[in-house]
Amino acid sequence: MTYHVHGVSASGNCYKVRLALEQLNLPHVWHEVDMMNGATRTDEFRKLNPNGKVPVLVIDEKTTLAESDAILCYLAEGTPLLPDDRLERAQALQWMFFEQYSHEPNVAVARFILQFLKQPGDPRLPDRIAGSYRALDVMEQHLATRTYFVGERYTVADIALYAYTHVAHEANVDLSRYPAIRAWIERVRSQPRHVEMPGVDQ
Amino acid sequence: MTYHVHGVSASGNCYKVRLALEQLNLPHVWHEVDMMNGATRTDEFRKLNPNGKVPVLVIDEKTTLAESDAILCYLAEGTPLLPDDRLERAQALQWMFFEQYSHEPNVAVARFILQFLKQPGDPRLPDRIAGSYRALDVMEQHLATRTYFVGERYTVADIALYAYTHVAHEANVDLSRYPAIRAWIERVRSQPRHVEMPGVDQ
Image 1 (cartoon, each protein chain N blue to C red):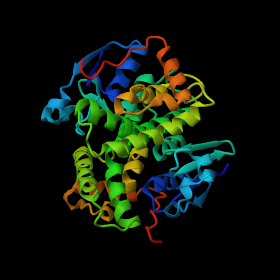
Image 2: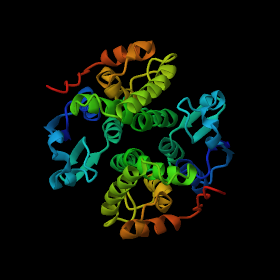
Image 3: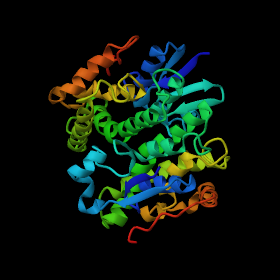
Image 4: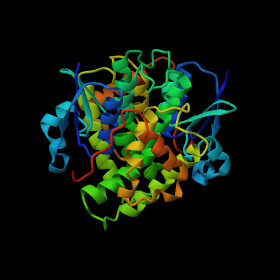
């Protein structure tokens, strides 16, 4: 079967799905969504995801799946990317919920304001950048004694957190104070079949 | 074994854990956290969860788990509350990520401002309430033709979304325009071993 993905190439949430599909060697067709011109707010798009957000995975004609980290878990089920052990699976989910609640709303939103909206004077920016550092502090502490987030091997938790962390500089967030995170980024990049995220203006 | 939970009784995120523990009939001890007086920001608490948030599930002396929806999945593994089917499991996760990204930051934060901080003039409130209605619109559309969020039966997705939806009025959010949500709330309440969430000032 061939999956269809509706996404924005330079969105970290969408990139997670692309990276997992590539690393799991799953055939797929990418449908680029013109988010900046309102394409996620059309009736047609809301049939794919009533919440009006990318990415969306189309599994078959009747079945779509939204929320990047849920899509990761679906694609990785039964593969080494998703732990089989009950506790490790829950720990992977813990980091994915951390990503969506404490990391993405800071790093990704600051990056969106700067790189997509191109509004460096936006009054929301200082809070988002401060929140980014709080999330990175938690990651740095965890990675100081570990190679990956869960079970000492590369999983969906790493994919989820890599997506926006490796472009934190595009959110005016400085990774130089985070040696463990920078070493982990290189380990993620060295994984088989790794692909990079396209730049915002490509 | 006996689980230990560190939580705030009137927090919806913490209530999810209590409800699952009660419905799964799992022995547990509840440790009330004095969040409003800074207890989640102490070094002692950060040993339980470096991210400084409740709830935390203590599984054994060396093992803690944070993030309410990850805890739900851990507790429900192997029970009817967590779908076994690959697609249904991913759909449950989709709704739980929706809850943490599009619902909780609106409904729960508006409720926190009103009921915990008691600041009805807070300038963040109108945006949070508007976001609450957007999330409830998505839920209403889904529930209009369904009894529960996933697989036509009660799962962790319902627990996750019930926690703050059933107290939406405490966030100045009016459920009267949402008949499908109100009927679903009654179905959730009628589940075996249901327990209510304690009020904020109890």
